[in-house]
Length: 361
Image: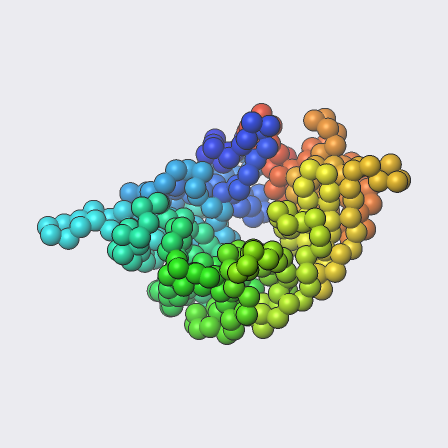
């Protein structure tokens, strides 16, 4: 079954590889975010069963949309950036509208609007970008930013009201007890890494390092912080999100490589010629596979990782699954290499289109 074209429009390169999908999955449903709507798709039939939209006129392009977040036993949450028309002497405004939909029907359950500060437009004419970073402490946590502006908000999932706002914070990761991001200091830098209490937005800690910095999720126990300190020194570390203390350095050779969490125990770092697995609690390197090893193995193209399995493509017609903890080939060979997978369905990129296939569990 094929997903709506918005799932891949503008997100594939000349080689046919896909990037930054605005898609989330839960059981046999997929949630496809666009600039002005989120579609709920029944993956067993390919039918769009519901469409949720914001109230305002959407900003940006469809490929600017980020993946929705499904809260356990709760709604599917999607952020939208919209314009609200002016009236009389009041000029138009830009608003973050957070829309929650019921997972089964895709219909709007509630929405909350947060005004983007008007002074942002005076500093930066670019369109803001928004993403739902996580859920913790009873709050849905959403970050909005441009090149010189940033804001993170916590919205109470029970009352649907804005609970807290953290100006100048571009958030990158949320764990059970901490929301970690960068304080951009009103765009004048240097960036400072901070940890917030997800319930209140209050600062828990501030890291000593400063410079041009990015923060990314690294599972429930770690966050990844990388960038350049003052003086040009590069750093790439895994931090304890509760304290901001360094847990481990990211191994050499992974400076520009993403390391997504497999939703079990492992961070899987992959690029064209190397795969490195890290323990998601300690940050310790478990194994690496690279081209032209002495044992004759080569690093295949990683398409996804989930629950201890790494899905790879060794050619256009051949897929292999690796054990995430050992790096060894698993005996079962999948027919296809999914780019997104759960226990029910895998999404596979075929001719720039996402097709759904049932999984074996």
